[in-house]
Image 1 (cartoon, rainbow, N blue to C red):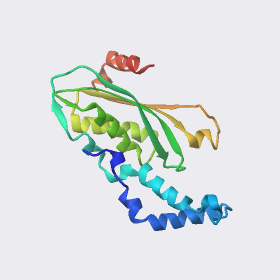
Image 2: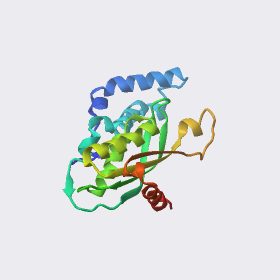
Image 3: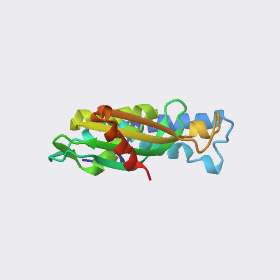
Image 4: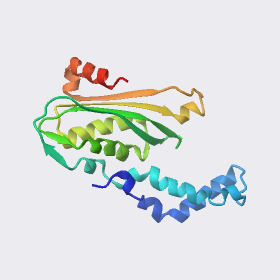
Length: 197
């Protein structure tokens, strides 16, 4: 199964010239000289960057978890500190951080690298952190049907750090709790203890 990095965003690719044109227009509208040396290739570079950072539109995140294994492990499995980069849908400004995923299988497990691929598939599109958190948990529930899932996402948002309120270093933390994690405080506490550095 290919990962998000293996995809070229064909939507961007098929509209490459239009996107380059509009990037050039934006540069002109903010007062830049698009003929100066440093900006000559900027519209093409921005378009290539969009192909990478919006590659999540090219795949269904559920497909990433498509291959599962029958395994009677019914204890907590955690993959923590999965680094992600995304784009805020409100300002198209970057935000980034770490995702921590825990689940208790009920007969089906998934390759651990697939959890990192799931994070990439969900985050490489215009997003909000709250939706990322819920989507990851809901897809895990839908595909793996585990006893429980817990997802914690930490994020630093440039729309908050570099503009507006201008509070660099502030972090947003969101969580999603499904299944046994909702009903078992000890399981939630175990997960939170294990993801701490």
